[in-house]
Amino acid sequence: MKATSLVTACLGTALIGLAGPGYAAEEVDLGKTQYEQNCAVCHGASGKGETAFGDLLKSRVPDLTTISKRNGGVFPFERIYETIDGRLAVAAHGTREMPIWGKEYGDEWPDYYLRQKEYNRSAFVRSRILALVDYIYRLQVK
Image (cartoon, rainbow, N blue to C red):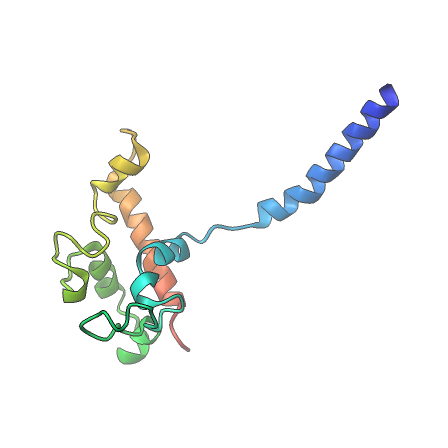
């Protein structure tokens, strides 16, 4: 009985050891996740504007991979940030009070998501927007 327990313990430890590094090495890309959840439906998975909704939209979806190229090689960080947080009006995104993704990037949203009182709402929202802006920056063609 003791030998069986020892073998089981060794086998379990080996399996955990083998599975552990693979699991720990997996990283979460918050910016990519935000993009996939809120932007890809219109801008496409690659950011080039290819979407199944193309025929339904009134205007052509801009290619997000060429933002820097269209701005003389400079990525307009502030303009992209303000577009996402709703301060910069973009007709296709809806009104400033209600961008197409709703209150997803507003200070009210963390209350729904976290259901906690002890956190900095603005910092939470800013971190999500910054991650998304960073991901859009990484999509830029070189």
